[in-house]
Each structure stands twice: as C-alpha cells, then as structure tokens.
Image (tube, rainbow, N blue to C red; front, side, top):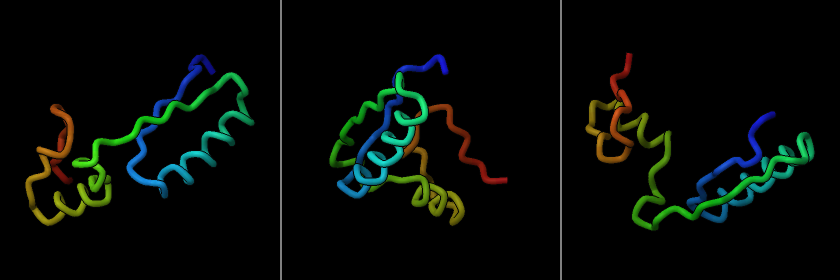
Length: 75
C-alpha cells in the first residue's frame, strides 16, 4: 500500500474504541500504516451517516451537514 497514514474522526469514546480496534488491525496487516485521530467539534458530534440518510429519506434538507458538492438526491 502506498498510503502511510489513515485519518479518522472521533465523535465519542465509543467511536474511539471501535476505531482503535480497526487501527490496530490495519497496523498488524501493514506495519507502515499509522492511524491519526481527530476529535470532532462538539457542535458536529451528533452528525453521522445514518442520521443524514434518515433526513434525506424523509425529504428533509441535510445540506448544512455535508460538504459542498455532495449529491444528496436519493435514487
């Protein structure tokens, strides 16, 4: 693999436990891979893909929760 770092965001301690296990497995499979964790801003910590999908599925406007350029049209 050409990558040396994987960047992951953490919203909570639950995320950390899950991501830590994945990071350890990635490192075990490819020892030159390091995972870098970033702590999410508190005002954004409730946002996750399941919530965004539910907003879109129920015809809500999720644009303020995703980066520009992301197509939220469900097909």
